[in-house]
Image (cartoon, rainbow, N blue to C red; front, side, top):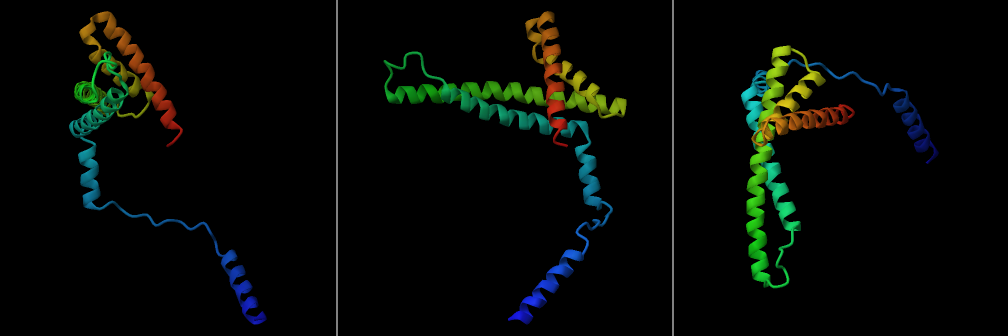
Length: 169
């Protein structure tokens, strides 16, 4: 037994002496990877995907917030009426949030992509301008004052999110 334990300790020392920090091999991207990057760098594709994802987020948020809402006449409604009311509210809220978040994702992504390609830089200025365009576009129905407030608010929100996400890169 002592010879086995001696061999094990010698192996453990040899393993400990080997360098732990090995360099990863560099490989050139395959044609499929290059095509995938080219497709994703297209502003139309990026905007469309962001719009679809934003719409999906809006649907989920609509379901969640409508489920939390209680009917006004809750005391006089039967359980069946409450369920029907809640389901109807979920549908209305989900569709409304879906449209809003899809538009928000599409406009922000398109604006940021176009600005980034025009400036040939990836920095906070792109985010500020894209946020301003998005906030102004979403709140434009409320008039010029609402569009200006939306522009400033969404630009500030975009910068805050950019700074928070910067920590995780």
